[in-house]
Length: 319
Image (tube, rainbow, N blue to C red; front, side):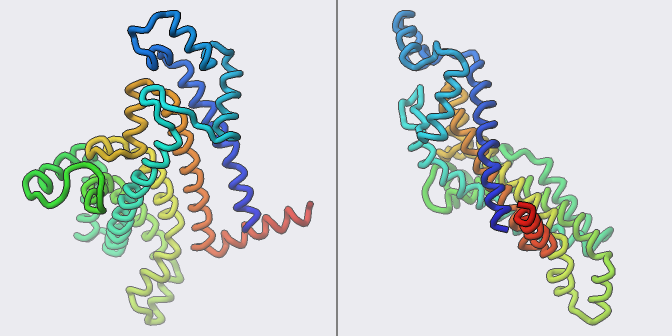
């Protein structure tokens, strides 16, 4: 198992490099002039050319790419923002925890609501409970997050004055953003849980457990749900990755200075170094998330763990 983890960690290196090359290439050919962004439109062409030379912008593409990869992955020097002149590493370390807290809060609500809804729908297949849960899931997929966010602000902040409408502070500042961002996750988890549970509860061992007099609650939670968790874990992991990189609209509406607002502001102002580094960081975090999902597979299903261990033993034997 340890060998598998090490191998997956090593695979993150080419993934991160590939993302870095793609992002750098796209940003390089974007219609923008770094010298004009930094000096302003009133600067003379001579001053702009001097700045381009000093920044190496006139160097060949592969030279600039090599310098970028070296600074980012070897020196861990992310550079400075063209617009704000702030250190990019400092900005990311300051903003990443806010996005992470918001993402985890949103995912927690999605899991705590979506999985029980899916279980209720599965054990009441074709009945009123199933129809109500699936109708709720359909509404969750259909409602735009930004529209729901604005309604929540109007209701709970403007009308009832119960929660802050925007900004950062205590946990109360994350309640409305998390609720606004969890609807799609609840719907996806409810639908996947229902589908997985329906496949499992028809199995022979579930019928045997019921015939032995096992309580229905134990049959559902200890037998059926445990064996239906693999696809559910997949949805949870991929949804976490999507949330981490897709909280831009929610952070913008609620004025949360996280990674989303950082990248959106950088895109709008053509602050390419911030866009490049932010995209790479999110890709690396998503890769770690997928590694955790694979490890959860092994924790839930002993057969997968045994497969990982046998693969490692075969490699040692052949080596």
